Image (cartoon, rainbow, N blue to C red; front, side, top):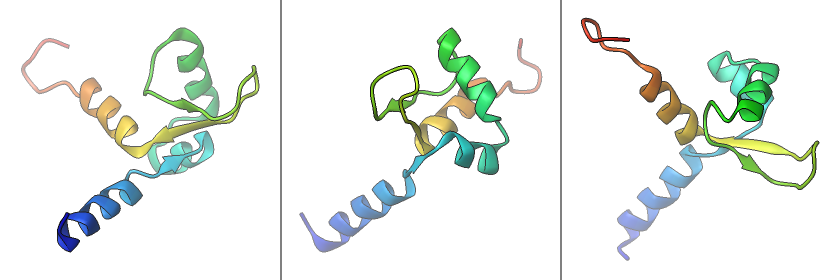
Length: 80
């Protein structure tokens, strides 16, 4: 792999960092409780459960949040 390609891959991975529910709230405005409700209902962005159990540690990839927002976007003039 060329150095530039490798560097670009590393930068993409860093930009797609893992966010805690609190960080998602700070950056995107979804409260941790809303995120928890969505997880319970099987809605919302994809997430990673880092530890097992009911109170397991949850993280979100930035790309999953961005994809979720893109999927929720309704273009003007189209059916909602």
